[in-house]
Image (tube, rainbow, N blue to C red; front, side):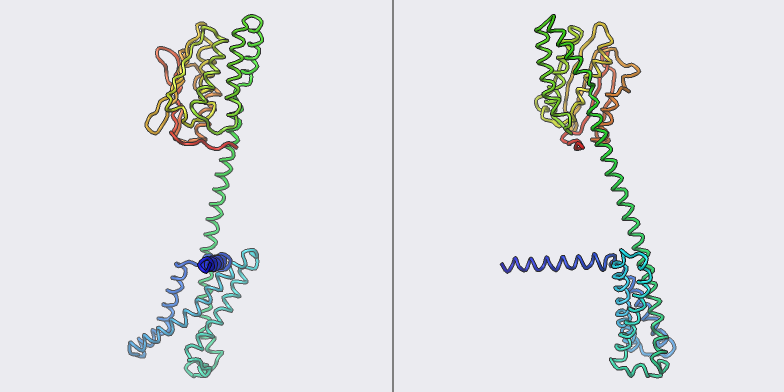
Length: 385
């Protein structure tokens, strides 16, 4: 219990110190304190340089005087520094009052510091102010010493404000960049949602129309097509809003689609799906293989009276997976590389994986097009909106 209590007290002190720094002394850095220390050292040397050069004071007494001047000057400048930092932070919500408050803080802190300096250097005796060496009066002493520390205090305030304004500007710029990146990510997610919704809606209606017509002429084919459609929808519908899928599910979805198209096209379509068992659990974006298969049917095989074949395959290539959809259709045409389906696929790959994934089209042998997608293995796609 005591140990827990000590930990709790430590946590309370730590939180208190963090709150004190955040609300009162934010921006007080080791570099800033080092600059103040340098100013104090230079001022102490300046105050006693005449003794060494003109009064021929022995070195050890002179060094003692310099050390004393350094100590009293440090007290004054630390008071000024802490007053500047605290005033700047506490007036963050009152920007119009910030600079008058800073001037007042430097004024008061430097005056208090020089008063403390006078007490220390007089060994705590107010008779110090009557010493003729200091012009014989308190007023003359203040006029001789305090303005110097007031000037140093204003210099410290100016430097601190300049650094804080630059820091706040950089922070604001970083915040804008973060907001811009977040907005771009939201736009990418919205774009992905639109792309996922662009699966051709007339496919479903055309298939149902063919099923209805086949039931009047070839009921067995109609039943087979309806079964494949149900299989297609059972896989496709849960994946419509998914960010990723497995290669096995995508292969099953595409195989159902091709089976439906094979009933529609008859002997004009042959297809093969070759997915190794070791890769069936690999993460892949949903609907991409299907989109490439649709593209092969629409632009490659449909225009040919004799149709052709579609082959879907996958293989591992080091840290990547290569997915291929090859057809023996009519080959490259003006729309082969610029259709909506291919453009959407490229956009989705760029949004999900950046430069780590790509879609490449090449000539198939002896005829047709091979569309190859290369994905990083084991990388999950961007989440859906």
